[in-house]
Length: 375
Image (cartoon, rainbow, N blue to C red; front, side):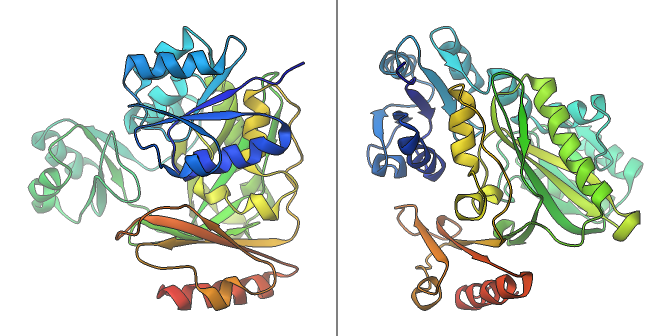
């Protein structure tokens, strides 16, 4: 039986890596993107058009065929576009996942409904709401726009009610949530994939390090996390997947508060797609997040998620070229996103897999030094 064609909304590096993972499975991909030279063009065909153009969406569906399926590589694709496509072909994950992930308030309400702990939060629709919210939960707190925020964008920190007007202006005077800032030990994330039949596989937890609001390094498996805490994170991911009737790969990000047996996790957000903190799985796990996503949306059996060692992924951001001497070392893998350099832009990533955490961390320190980020 011929395998379905997978259409991908978006043609960035995630689409490129999905197409690369699909090829050995015998699955063809077609990305929809306004740029014919987008990163995905290096790995699959591209249908040129805007993500909200009905004609372009219809062309994508036609190229996928009656047995085809459409997925997406980033969560800011209009939910209406996914809904239009769902009338023509299967869309996996479904439009509901997009709707929830695109709105921080919907996300937090979902966590509450599922009994998943999250930071104390208040919805904010006006400056008056913000002043009241700061008074209710205190400072420090962080104001986050409900929509379109990523890599630290659409956010502003408040230390006291006097900061309210400045923060409200900083996020664009748009509907937002005010989050109580928590004294977290670290940020962790879990990557999980759910298949058409409801079967779910979960990867080891990741520990994530940021610089200037952008993910810098992910280490996996995360070390020093109590078994019960790790199990709670994985259980939370399963709850979200089942609640959304989700098909595909998802990331759930958490703040770890406290350490050892007293540690607990507070859910921050979901990403309804393959995720930057799961890039290490290409070389570091038995089945990558990209392969499992393609397998899930096309109805194939999901692969094992065991780690093959101690892995780390470092993003190359802005004007940096891959550190040649470091990336050329044994076990280092450079992934080029084929993007023009500009400040704050992810241009590629490097992955290392080592036998021990110490060997892995020594390699990571070399990368961080070479790109000027504190270890």
